[in-house]
Structure formats: C-alpha cells, structure tokens
Image (cartoon, rainbow over all chains, first blue to last red; front, top):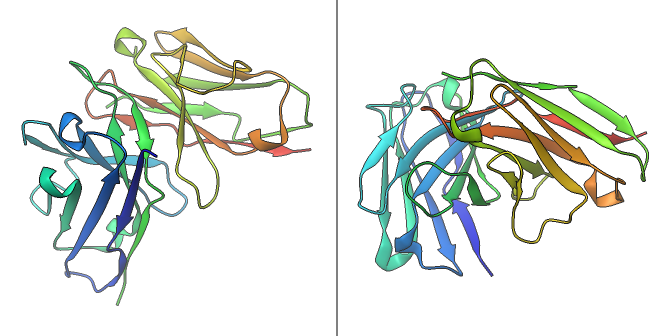
Length: 120
Length: 108
C-alpha cells in the first residue's frame, strides 16, 4: 500500500525547535518530489516546503530561513526541521507526494498529519 | 499569489442528491492546473480530480470536475453516505501553490 506516515509533532515553546519525519512506503521514494503542507486551526491549507528528486529545496516566504526540508532516499524518509517557532506555526503538518512529471502537479498521496503546538 | 475562494462554506444535502461546489481564483490558473481533494477527520486527504477535470485513479465516476481560467467546479452526482466530508481545491499553476478554504458537505 502506498502511504506516508508523519511523526515528530508535539508541544514546543516559542523560539524552540522540532523535527518532523515522514516515512514513505509502497513506492519508489527517490522518483518523487515531496512536500510539506500545513493547516492552522480554522485556516486554509498552506504550502510550506518542497524537495525535488535532485535534492533542490523550496520554501514559502513565511518559513524561509527558519525551516529546513531534507530527504533520505535510502531510508524512504522526508524531514522538516522547524526552528525559531512562533504561535503562527501552530498547525497540523502534512507530508505529501507530488504526481510525477515535468512541471508542477497535484498531490496524489497525503499523510494523516502530525500536530505542532507552539505555546508557553 | 493566487487566492482561491470556495463556495458555499457548507452544503446541506441528502444522500442521492447532487452537490455542486465552486472554486474561484483571483487570477487565471495556468493550464487549468487545479485539483480537488476530499478530507475526512483523522484520515489522509484523497486526490479526486486533477488538471481541472481528470479523475484520479480509483475515483468513482460520480465525481466530475469542470472549469478553466478563474472558475472551477466539482460535481458529485448521487451523493453516497461516504461522500459527506470536506472538499478543498488547490491550484498548482502558479507559485506559490495555494488552497481554497474548503466546503463542507453535510447530511441534511
């Protein structure tokens, strides 16, 4: 079965750090661009970051310089390092897989999400 | 940034009825690069439609997508009990990718 499973969320104080993980199974991990998308309470979904098959990385302006995405193909794993966290980063974070191809495509697989709460 | 506005916020319908959901973009979505997803509490979101009108693998034909430019729609014919959920649209034709705020389809 093709699936993505996130972990690593939790309660963290403002200014703190957290590392999210996403374990993939059921497909050739190295062939796909992967993303993190988040949803704050009562808000719409927000694209956060992406890592290409080449290892190139992309970030939303709201997290640039604070978050770092990475992938480890040998372990079929995606990561998101969250630093300098603020209340605005409180959200459910989803790992997603982009449809394969040249250009930008929809997300054909989503994880169930991991919740991050930034609070003192 | 392309802003996607979905309407209505909530749709109250009975099983067997047709649901029509709207997604309007603040500017034209390049190459009809728009997708629709279904989300249920505690479950992973599911891709229903991509490229505005292409059904994803395994999606029943009661789900259909239409539209281009700035106006898109998702139609669900003959609602089944498992179709009551939140639906959101997503444009990937421009950077950054953006999402609508969602439409909840609830049982009347």
